[in-house]
Image (cartoon, rainbow, N blue to C red; front, side, top):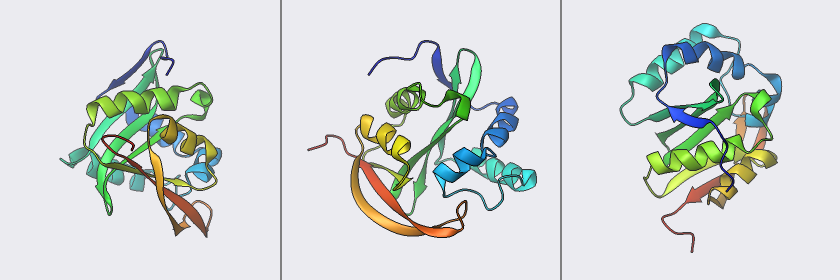
Length: 164
């Protein structure tokens, strides 16, 4: 994979949260992610959600920084199928290989395997990021996507120690 110059992962800082809030309000990002907060514009719900995440001991969380700017976030948590990874990138950082490079770097920090991920079946960009980092599609589910207000298909992906 081609490295992204000036990309770094660092611990989340309080000043990152307003940027994350604005990023998760982007209509295009919300549509692509599909499985989002009930109301992306609800700052109180966002703050409560992040207070919970940052207090959790089983969550590994990093801020993605590119050229000194907060580009997004990447995290892992224990979901209903095991440890899962998730990420969000501000739209101005899309299409440059940043999500793939950031996830690849995160996988050096979060070494738990197997590691799972989910993506809306029509989110080709996210599926490409995950597959470029070694995740394989292992299942398909249907679920209610709050952002789209409908039931949609979702892929479950898995990163094993080795992808045999």
